[in-house]
Length: 291
Image (cartoon, rainbow, N blue to C red; front, side, top):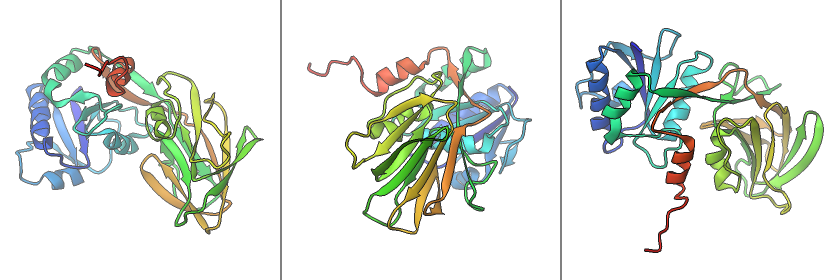
């Protein structure tokens, strides 16, 4: 790995020391480091960056992207990658960190393992969203790593979400919204709405209603080859559709088609990290707090 991209959104309290440590490890290995342009502006002259250059977009010449922040930062980083097959390594300066699993205090070990090829690529599926509406969420940026969500806009009234699977009517949800999640996104918004945790290599999608009025509506796990269509109707003229953290509005009754993308995103998992270890630690499974 020679040409490295670094991306971040915010400067947390300990971000500068983390950035400095990352740069030190990369320079020790004679890497050419490029940092996202807006992130460079955010850092300013607070530390000496000593980089090969900056970027506003990526190409296939990059060997790795490093995301510094939380899971939301990785979701933003993924939007730069798309179909380029550039692996991503997340360093966590945020809170939970289901995707950004590496901690700042273990950077020396992490880069030693990385450059000694002591890692695996966790291939993560994505969802694409298309519609006949001429604007918003256009190809090729119409994909989500975590989830696609449709929800109400500018109203306290619930919306009706007519949902079909492979052309067959599933139901019309009366709810605040509906989440269609990948296995990666099962630990995100879907989980907070009562959805199941799914291991990343499971070939499935999850449909999770948000605060459903029809109380018998429950999260549904379906094969990831299923084509999902949703049509939203409500009292407002528009509704919101979000792809991870990118939001757009659509006119009522716009039909949106959701399906698994024809490409994946590669997340780097170092040999001492696994999904099972991560959820056990983050969700406090098996930890007795009575003492």
